[in-house]
Image 1 (tube, rainbow, N blue to C red):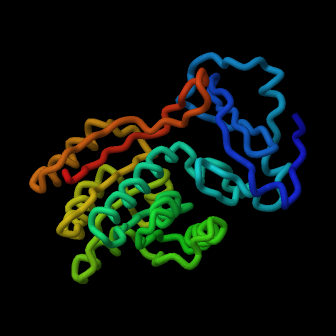
Image 2: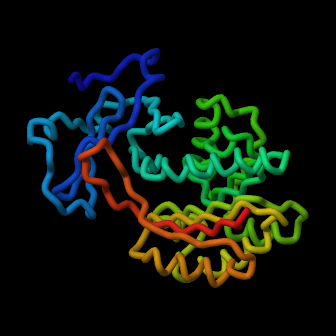
Length: 283
C-alpha cells in the first residue's frame, strides 16, 4: 500500500478504518494513509505483524492541508494538528442512532425534530441529525470549533439546512434557553476531553448533574430523549445511568448506558473510548 497522499479529486471517497489495536496504540487507515496514535486503554497484544504497523506515517509531516475523510456516512476534514481523535470516529454508531430517531420522529409527528447539541465539537451529531431533516442548535464555546463544524456541514451539503451555530458556553446557553420559548425533542451533551474544563469551565463531576436538571426543562412535550457521551475521565456507565434516572424517571421512558467503542472489521479488537447513557421517552 502506498503512503502517499491522494490528490484532491480522489479524497472525496477516503474512509476511516480501525486496522488493529494493542500495545498502548491503535492503528488506523485514513484514506490512503496509515497512522498510529497512543491509546492507554489498549493493553492487549497486537494482531497484525510489525511490518503492518511500520507502515504508519506521522500525520503532521505527511499531511500539509486538511484531508477529506469519511467516517461512517459523514465526511470531515482531517487536520494534521487535531488528528482523527477530534473527529470522534468512536461515536459513529451513536450518530446513526440519533439520525434514525429524528427520521422516525418526523414521520410520526409530521414535523422536523428539534435537536440541541451541547459541546458540539466537530459536529458529528449535528450532521447526522441534520441529514435526517432535524433543526439543530449546535453550541460550542470555541469559535474555531464552530468554524470547523460549519466546514464539515458544507462538505456534507448541509450548509443550507436549519442549523443554528452558537458560540457560547454550553452550560450558560442552556440556562438562558430555559427563559425562552424554544423546546427541543432530542438533547445531546458531548463534553469531548478534559480540556473542556478550560473550554467553558465544565467539570463533569461538579457540573453534569446540574446541567441535566437544566436540560430537563428544555424538553418538548413529546421528546425523543437525552443522550450524554463522556469521553473524558474515569466515569462509570452506572454513574451516568443513575444520574439520568434521577433526573428523567419522572417523565417515564427508559434509561440505558454502556461503553463507547471504537470498532473495526470483524476480528479487530474494539477499543474502549468512553461511556454513554441515554434516556429515551417511550413512544
